[in-house]
Length: 399
Image (tube, rainbow, N blue to C red):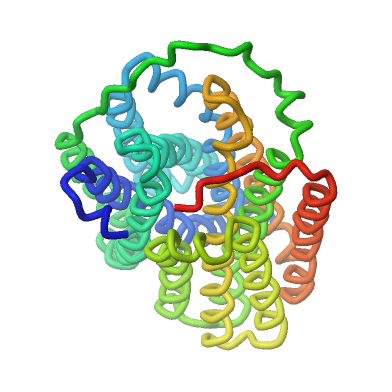
């Protein structure tokens, strides 16, 4: 990790800080989105619709964001989508003033598109350093999420009563935070990418999907996000509305969860060197299973806290492992297609999970919701076995 503190990592740290500040809107929405949804939605089953639509916006914006970055360049495209994020915050303020659920849902979609662009910073960071340091660069950018984990919920609570309409001030503070992130990004110097001199025939999507290792990448990402989103989205409603825990306690649990999603990134290179990629996936699944057991038996504040922390750590292990495996599953000139398939698949399933959480939490118990998370866990276990039996495991960089 000491390489992360050399002068060559200046761009990486700028991206990390900028992404952390702008990305604070996501944990803010996780805390506030379902609570506002519960107040504005015509049916309680639609309470988590804003979260689901935010994630849907993330999935649907994958191709437009990629094309914008190719046409405008990484920096200008990031500025563009940060501007959309500020517009989304303004629309949120207006929707709360008008008490419009539909307008608030549109806000969620706009913020989802901003999130898509911010997620691309992990690839931009890897382009900014030598290939042998790409895993460390991605980890540093992801570690910036710790700032977002605390800033987002704090903005939500600090701004909740700034105006007569609840949570309007939260989105005003979020807009200021995104503007600050755009200012930090002005220090970023886009790296010069050397063109590939030899191009191979692009692989089709079907060809990529026939590769067990590529399917493992998808299974890892889908399982990581589906379980995390399903449980995380339902937590504020379960804690605050059903188990009568305070908003302050709910905020602390969400903050701890998001921090746990990114803290392991500081030691990710060491962990990968010891456990390897597939070992990290297994560790992630162990964390998820432990979270299910704890959440099933303990609905106190401490129980929710430990459950959500384990949920965050498990997500990190599975997501970083899948991200690290992805480059070795395709040729260099297929990277945009592979990244697009991966992100679109993962965030589409995540959107379904987030929307299902609102439906599930009003029809079945919290414990039954947790038990349903065993389905995606079984999925990734099956793909791990398939890949091992196929004998096509790809070599990966363990730095």
